[in-house]
Length: 98
Image 1 (cartoon, rainbow, N blue to C red):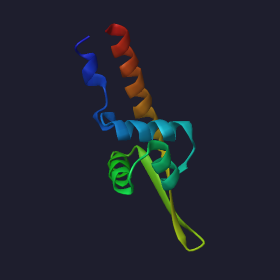
Image 2 (cartoon, rainbow, N blue to C red):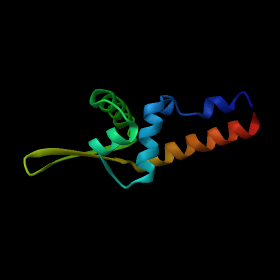
Image 3 (cartoon, rainbow, N blue to C red):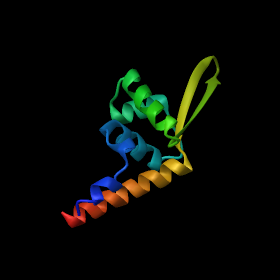
Image 4 (spheres, helix red, strand yellow):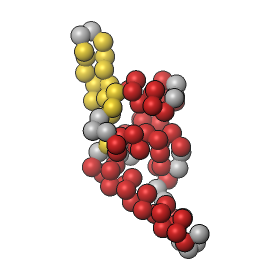
């Protein structure tokens, strides 16, 4: 059982990143404001964690304008979906073994 801990993905260690991925897994895409409200985060906190997930290749960011307002949406990439599912599977194995 001691080796199971090493199968957890460090990108999802933080509760905010775990929350971001959970919301993105449940939705095709989510706007910045929807994600911010769903997780009750500040702009800066959400932006820094989404940026880390984007750098890891787990989140796809789309920026566009709606009228004259910028609109940013996020979606889990295929790699992100796969990595998050593997993380959840590892958590389940860890829980069953405890």
